[in-house]
Length: 94
Image (cartoon, rainbow, N blue to C red):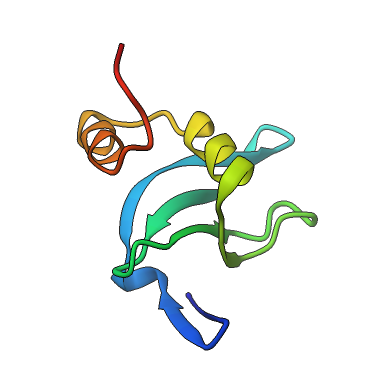
């Protein structure tokens, strides 16, 4: 998916995927939201849906601040994703 924000073009296919979480509607899978990092360091949320939930739609937008923190907290990362999140300073293992 592609989007333009403040004259900058972002493409979900060329961003680094740092992890994601699934959405469910009445127990059925309805899509996934991914945390992406663009080449310029901008963080984006990309939601890819399958149409099972009428309130959830495909979207790609910049996230920062509290929204970024909430997104990071929602991800259940694999070991590779955890390593990337640590490398970008988004989480700390204690």
